[in-house]
Image (cartoon, rainbow, N blue to C red; front, side):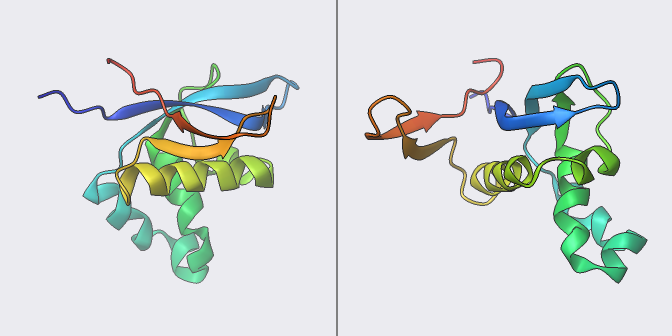
Length: 121
């Protein structure tokens, strides 16, 4: 049995780098125990526990557009809408084991279920 461990995503707005390039498409991998534990030892997380999601996302996002080294600075500079989207995706994939979510069709407003494509399927 193959287990999907990486999932493609597309940010609602996109990360804008220092050259003004917008990066929307990326890949998030499933979190490991180390991904959940090591950030709790980080000084920024210790002084501000609400920083934990930033540290977690910087570990599990393996690509964002052409950027392959994701760090906390990139996550800190996401638009709030994109940050919330990634937090929701992280929770669905890692806590709930779901690779689909309910949303509205942009054309007809019908409620639909959209699957998050995994890589290697």
